[in-house]
Image: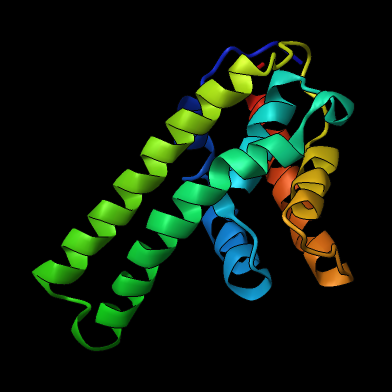
Length: 165
């Protein structure tokens, strides 16, 4: 495996469109209350070779929490409310664009925050440990069904890392 200096947003631009990634992330979000941005951070950290033992997930979650609770969750709720009746309207499109812009802006902030914490740049590691640690830090118990979804996501991330070699 090779070392990667991709920023968090560059990593997400490459990972998210891969077949299977989006539905897994949205299922983890909608069914288990996991924060997609934090799961993406976990995948990025693994791709950069950051060992879970050296990752301060409490601080990462604390950095994410205000933007998630004050902005992103409200935009998502507004988009979903409008979607119930007017999915094909300009209003829906505008709210969705705002939600996505807020998420991209927060990903940039999280990337800078993590790099400021001294993210290791080494050979990629398996994403499993980072994903599980992210869930634990978010207060979500890793049940058998969550574990299966995380393993599937980790497999997709690992394939993407190998493709870059």
